[in-house]
Every structure is written in structure tokens, then in C-alpha cells.
Image (cartoon, rainbow, N blue to C red):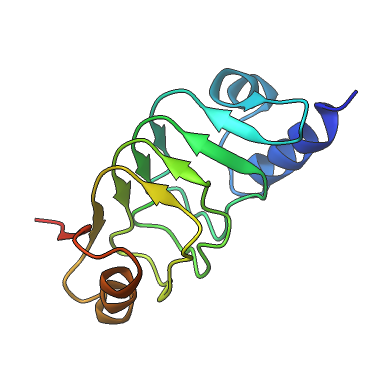
Length: 130
């Protein structure tokens, strides 16, 4: 069925980064007929050794925590984040412009390249983590 392809992609991703099994995927993500994927509330992926995000994330209703990971590209960010985006202590230096972020974007003070890119693409959204 139309849900299996994105679901399999997310299961493979979760297995690669040691996040969880099929039950965790099914409890966390909602797979839609158009191939997009959503999360109703918050998605905590901090401190998980994640190197990338899978394609197809459309919306996260709450906060998205990606801090303390090895993500070098943020291309997999969803189209919409309902609250804050946490990017502290990751190696990525650019943020794509396609994401609508309702809250703030948090980084560490030493992430100067990423902070500059956030200021340019998302004016007024940058915050430094305490």
C-alpha cells in the first residue's frame, strides 16, 4: 500500500541510527497517502548519533530536538515545525529555507556559520542555548 514505502524508509533510518524498532516508528510518526510523514507533538532526537534526517517529513507539531548529533545536512527538515528547533552542538553550517518555524531556533555560541545562516534566512528566530 501507499504507506509502506515511506514507512520502510523511516524504519531503515531508525535502524541505521539506533533509534528504535517498528513499534517506535508506528507510535511516533503518522504516514499519509501522499507519502508525507508527520509527528503530532514533539520529536526528541537529541544525543542519538544521527547523521541525517529521512526524506518525507512534512510537519512536527511541537518542538524538534536535534542537538548533540552528527548531522552535517539539515535538508531533511520538515516543511513545518510547530514550536522550537534545537540545533545546538551539531556540525551543520547551513539551514534550508523551506521550513516554516513557529518558535525559535537554538544553537551554541560557537556555531558561528550556522548562526549567521539562521539570521539571514530566519530573521529574529536565532537564540543561543544557555
